[in-house]
Image (tube, rainbow, N blue to C red):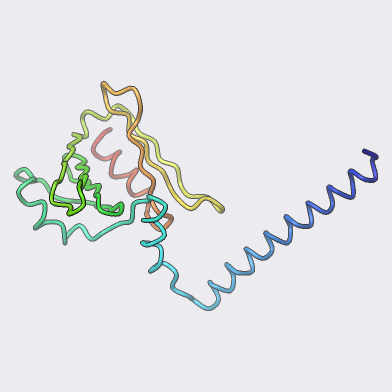
Length: 165
């Protein structure tokens, strides 16, 4: 391949990529300028992608009342299709709803004291989700959960730090 041919192909790909980015940013600007509320669709998108979407923790108090200890309060809660991740002031409760009818439920309790360390990753420009990893003492691999773009992963990090550190 000659130097001229290489430069021509390089310029073509650079222009294609530049146009794609220009269109993406134009669309984002239009959404921002028109103040279009796209977040109401994020729950559906997050469910399809397997990302957790925040739910109102006050609504869960009736459902979790029998599971909570004296003085235990729900601080944050997230839903992944039918399953839930519930952060309390004492532990993380992972609810796995099983079966076609959803009558069978598995509650996995992770006391904050058993979490050796954790990591969070925020969503990027082209990344649609944030990620949290929890390393539980005695387990070789971390527990990993993706969160939707509109979830405040930094707040989750502060919550974990409050109870783990």
